[in-house]
Image 1: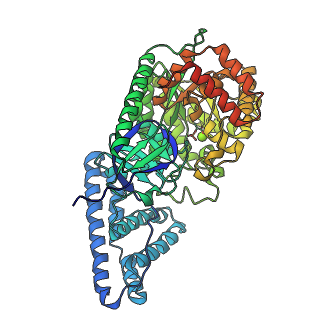
Image 2: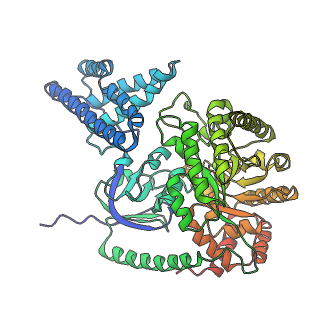
Image 3: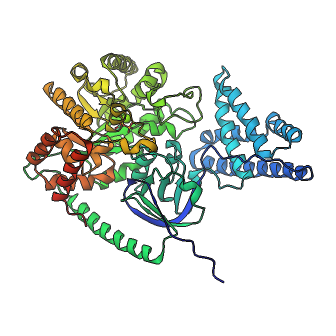
Length: 587
Ligand code: PEP
Ligand code: MG
């Protein structure tokens, strides 16, 4: 008899990265493994201990294998972290205490191990010694692996995703997503998150479809289930029927035709019908994205998110290591500009495994992140500033600070930069003495003080992702309020207008590098408001160039003027959408 056919289920989410994927699901269970809690019968207790020993052995084998691979591919220094992980498995106190707890309480071994390891993690993270504090991260990593082995769950590492699968996760942290190898994931789907979460930005850079805000797909989907991910409409279809597969085959064809039209137009200059040239630049996170920047004809890099170099690393990269990465990007783009943004760690991008640098915060988005973090860790900041300065000798670099909240902060950052310049002069190392410095405008207080910031800035770049979250008080990664995250809210449009007008009055150019810039429905509005250039994930460039080439700047200005008179986000969105549809025929 045939196995029963599972009924097709269509589940709605939020479209985060375009494309359609069809394949088998890999459920990625991240960090907080759900630990069952039950009593073990006395006659099964010896078997329970044997099960624990088996899980420890399996974990040891997995870590040794990864260690060997890392050593082979990256070198012994990078592999050292896994020695620390192996040591955790030999920790007699941790293992012994788990077994003692089990013998005393008779609760299942996962529960005992979870409780003991949590106590250890807590104790280590409170120790006043940097080395010992870092061990909390090691114990956490290893404990998760042991628990997964006990529970028979797939290994918790996306870097080991070998087959092409649709990755379904509760959430994907920036470091998890930074681990996904090119070509390994067919699509990314998360229970939580919103369009601007960093996992999504990485999905776009990997050119895979992504749908977020699914609610509880990780509970519904099983490893190996077949699914369609529709990154255009933000839906996931589990166990698709023959007719759905047929329908999607057609949709995919149509999208492909439209996309090839966009790609053809992408070879042409970004000039409006009334002759206004619009610089279109790329956002990147990793050096590996350089080929995409070239393929999509970006005229420079408007945002290089350098924190990904840190998120991916077990330790802080040195000045030299950073220099090598920055120089590679700068050389590849020369003579086009590269805007290198200084570290934007913290918020939703903490460095894992460094709890002493990034202790838990109740409000991480309003916490010690980005420039604030750099100013209290001048050594880390200075290593980066020197590396950027050194790279500036190899092409056209512009340096940009994230999360500037006011002129005083900018003055302090510039003072540290001046120290770094003096150090390099003393070392006799060249850098661009005319290096331009700019600020991201992504906090309302910065938007309100553009006149003051303009005195110290050669350019501004508006980070709409954060600006919208702070202006509207909407956590950008909270799916429960994702519907309230409205880029066309009148407050957003008015603020953008004020920033541009105030900056232009002081002859400072303004770019937008938030996700709004890469959406062809919003790009005309931004240009109509007077924004000078747009920077976006490279894959969005063709669609934005297409609409730029299909519109006049005069019409875009009229659109912006009308938007400024409207009272609701819905009305403004409708105008933008109509503007787009009138110019771009999407099948
Ligand atoms: C932004 O906030 O819009 C931005 C571009 O920065 P990030 O998304 O890296 O916070
Ligand atoms: Mg930001």
